[in-house]
Length: 182
Image (cartoon, rainbow, N blue to C red; front, side):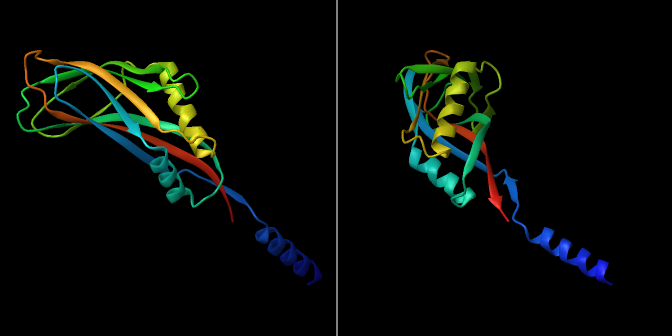
């Protein structure tokens, strides 16, 4: 009986200790720009406040270990009067330290249909730009980043004499990694 009582006390003590569990919620933010000329150069801003709000919503103020960049994609929404059939673009991110733009993806092409279309960015990714995006997201998540994430896009439309009238939304999805004590 004495051994059973000691064993029960040990089990209860072990079960009551605090443990950290890792959680992996996802955040997703975007910025929109419009194209109305056949050759274009536009800026897209994802406000740091929106990223912070999304992080806080899913982490409830817990300490973030890191953000893992999961995906980048665009959604093209044709508007009235559009006759263009394709858009080819480069996407760059503005470095926080140098203010220069660093390529994230080059030669990304999207076919423009009659309905909105989502297209994942999987080809033409540039390591330096992707690394800058990861750095910025992680700095924001850890409370060290206070600047907006700024993208620049430039490209051309097919056919060149076609009328382009589309909205393009650039999405970024990341997985938060944080510990919660239970």
